[in-house]
Length: 271
DNA sequence: AGGTTGACCTGTCAGC
DNA sequence: TGCTGACAGGTCAACC
Image (cartoon, rainbow, N blue to C red; front, side, top):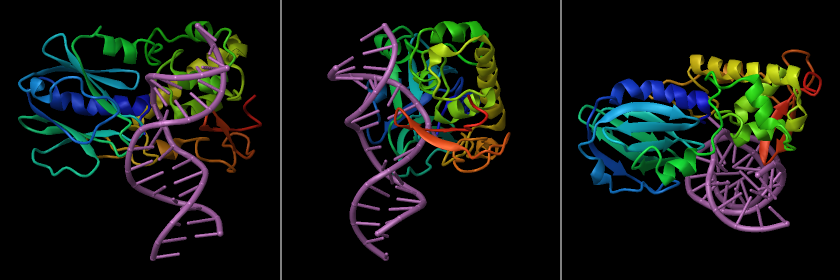
């Protein structure tokens, strides 16, 4: 579910609800990808100062140097719910406040909620340390993309997914951005030159910001923090559309596999 | 160091 | 109807 737009939409949804609020308790269910890293009771009484985002991670900053890292994995979603709302079998963490609770729902449990004692703690460096630039920030430029991809022999699709050049582009938006840019996803990343890199840069920014404005994806089960669904599926140009006509030229969209992930592209428009 | 593969876990859907 | 296998939005660790 969650690529950068979904995580950002989630951030925008929960930030007003929990910023300035005091944590009454943290209640954990089944284990997630990583252990919390502190006693849940240690969070009681702490106040949320801000909710930020880095790549696909949400950073819940506390009233001190410490913070909580929240990742939605493949199937996670977060909602703000009334106190006492019964938990379902896939609800694995409740951050309980005085007025409401923040609930992490994650059937596959690839997500995580991790405590970090400070912003430069080892766990933060391990999880965030190698992340590339933010695609919706001013440091993301065609020149940056060129420098990050120089000499790379992996395909441009896999390079985007790896997150070292730019963060937040997941499997759906990688296919979509490469389609908009007219680039074959199998092209070795280091072969791309200026005109195409500029188109790719613009396409990434366009696809991600459009998706944020639309409220994220609803391909399967994405639910925003208020319970509403996104609409990206209505706007997908190639993802999930193998065999259907390319919206630009009419050729059949092709499905292939790269690094055990599905890739969709138009064999005529993307070269 | 860069590239490739397997692993984590559960739900859903297509096919027999 | 029931079983089996493939696949799903991420990304880390281990291997060459």
